[in-house]
Image (tube, rainbow, N blue to C red; front, top):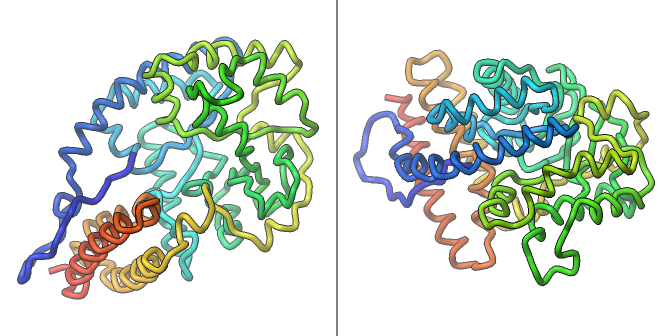
Length: 367
């Protein structure tokens, strides 16, 4: 769950260190989180039941969401209990859910990944082996950093430009062994499951497993937005029975559920040359950086980050760094590219107003 920026216009003559509340409506974010957390608790109980029936899962919890979990110790405890079962793997990520692996200088990306690892260790007593970049972003430039940080597996988007007509049903050879999301089957569960006009409706475990069983390959990677599963669950679809019965249905066809770390240890990696030449992100790079406003916002973030780095060691640096981190959230980029061009333009104006105000504070040396 992101920290969505509020509508903001800089006040002339404003001084002082920018606080989170200046740019983000945390009261609204808190209210939405508490409402969603009750649903997540129920879904975590369902996941636990599925694990007891042989299921295995991995969780990619964004940094902003993990910080929000501090507001609800019961929800945090439920994730901890899932980890204790041995049937759940928690993955590493970028602390602010940013696109920092695309920056010219990857030092901020490196710092974000380390920050997130520390947060996982503090809150869930976990040291991740698998890395999932923001929105399944893949860029070859980040691979060596992930290797140096000890990651053994990477999950990314199985988009057309990477797969070149093949199905993502293998472990692929890379600096870090790579699993690629099977987009169609993932979105059958994530987006289409409750749609009564979908030709696959109703999707029962037996039908889904038959689809999987008809494919040739070693391992199939499903990556599903947790909030979308909450949506299906809240709308009284059959998703609960599906999750509950899936492990046993897979087992009846001789198919085993694995965590990502287990998968890359078990199967021999295959070469995929496009991993060395292509970039990808969930829903396509054009959705994240496809227009002038998105490209300009990225360049401004890089410039402000370089200016902010000059304040390291000063008393206000950590506070400024935290605000800057949340101004990098990928959701900000995606929201500048909606179907409604006018809405995207208005949002871009708002984000640049916020970023210009923040930059003024940085140039004033944080005072």
